[in-house]
Image (cartoon, rainbow, N blue to C red):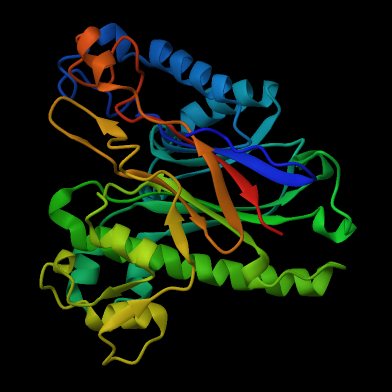
Length: 364
């Protein structure tokens, strides 16, 4: 999809979401079609950083980043290119020794320091939220609480350098707030109920974060930001297809509590507790007005292995104040045939996921 050029002052940003495949998971038994030398981090890591550098995105959301890789690889290499970032490992890291903790993967968010400053950050731990919102539901504790997936938020503020073709007439419009959320939901297709609950808890925490940021800005800044003024990007590996309850909930803004992805388990009280609804409510709603920036008809797969190919990674955006103006499409099927590629990773592609890269215009 080509980037649409517009005249006059504009504030645009490019975003990458990329599951880089943790070294712990890049094992020959998982990817027997890939020669071992192309699974080694020394080779894959360099290919990944080359790819990131080639796109030069303003904001980068990475999943399956090990703490060791964040501290010793991604941070120093991206700092040279003008980025700074934050990281959080999955929740199990808190129970481990320092040595083992450094091998736990998690989520990272990087941004160009020339264009953005960090206002605040927050870690979302789904297992802790499951305990808090279990409402006496055993399955919330037995199925949801036992998964250690996380979400990571960064609230960024634009600088004058983020604007093209001059600055807006109102000086207060130069500083725009963006909530960047990055997540990696549970992987197992047999636990689609867990993924839906994680997505719901994530959406509710984003709503809370928007309310908090708005409240704080009213107290501390000359310019006040209503929740609806704050730009929203939600990136990640959702391990869910476009026909899933996760995708329906996030893009439609609601989901029936008897949706098949709940697997006939009685989550009703827990779901309504998350959103503060009456116990009798049959449909749960969120107010984020999200849409996917990369339609499936243009991006049929983001995860490409020997036995699984589907779009499960997404860049969602708040439609009220963000507009996609271009994105990079997929690799053509003919290329895989010509190069005899049966799955990723391989000698050309360093992860089993492809990066999503989108360009946005902020609507002020």
